[in-house]
Every structure is written in C-alpha cells, then in structure tokens.
Image (cartoon, rainbow, N blue to C red; front, side, top):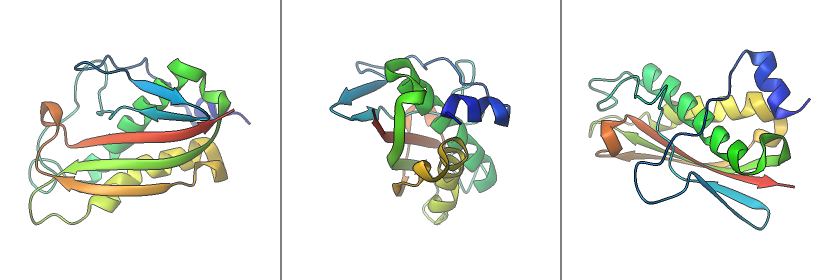
Length: 151
C-alpha cells in the first residue's frame, strides 16, 4: 500500500502546502534526500493554539499539533516529489516551545513520529531529536522538520 493510500485508509486528508512565512522554500531535494523547512501546525492558514507547552498548551494538545505539523511536512514533500516516491523517513526534528520546567518534549514529538509510522509502516522508523525552546514563530507550541529518502 502506498503512503497516499494509507492516508486515505486512515481518513486523513493531505493538506495543501503551507505558504512560507519568510524567504525560504517548503522543501528542498538534494540527491536522494528531501529536507523540509520547519513546519508549524497550521490548519487552514491559522494555528489551532498558541503559547508554551506546560502552561497555555497541554502536552496532549501539543502532541496533536506535532501530528498536524508532520502532516504539513508530508504535504511539502508531496508538493516537491510526490509522497509515493518516499522510500523512508530518515530523521525528524521537533521543537517544542515550553516552560522551563517542562521536560516532556519527547512525548510531544511522538505525535509526529506516530503519524509517520502509520503512514509509512516500518519505513517510517527514524532518528529523532526533541528540543525544548523558549519561543517559536507566531507563538506556535511546536515545529517539525522532516528528512526523507526518495526514489
């Protein structure tokens, strides 16, 4: 089953590519790798919530937003090379805007990792970083970057 078929089976619509907020492109290919720019959890051009995880945003809500950000990353990949050309996910980097005492960044970024596992199966297994930061663009709670290998 292809990634696009899995998304359809899961009842997940691939969104359009989120427009960049500044001077960059949503995704760039070099050789067999595609790197996405950092993806915010934009839905129809807006963030579903803003603020720090551990204060205004719960870890559970942030994990759901990490999933949305990863889906936006998949849209960027699809817009560049077609999602069905992805051989596997190489790496995920997740940034979590969090309070100084919040240490659950890995659980938040699991929202992205688990989606990738559903879409790509074993080929979705990846290396990963989950980083706590003071602030993200637009006061977003999470930002996700993907590196995928393509045919």
